[in-house]
Amino acid sequence: MPAITLKNIPESLYDLLKTAAKSHHRSMNSEILYCVERTLGTHKINAVEQVKIAQNLRLKTAKLPLTDESLQEIKNEGRA
Image (cartoon, rainbow, N blue to C red; front, top):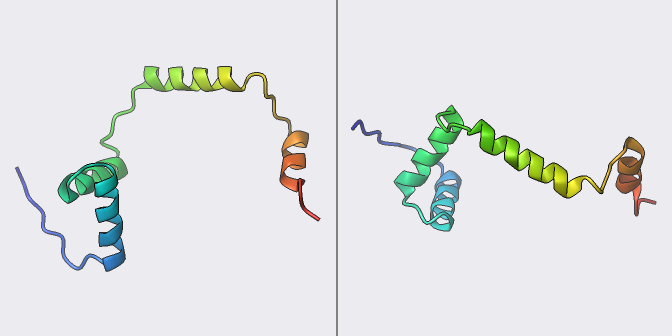
């Protein structure tokens, strides 16, 4: 399997990767691979699963219709 060596990683990026890896219970290498795969689009989306998620969200919000007017009221709420 090919290997890559990363050089000159900014300290702030290194710290973000380290924190993300720890919170996801992954090694730094696994976290970097995960980020690269997500960025380059090798992560395959299951269309059927995504449709089910959307349908569930619609069911949960069906009784909370939003209109342009209600959204504007929400945005302006509490503003002087």
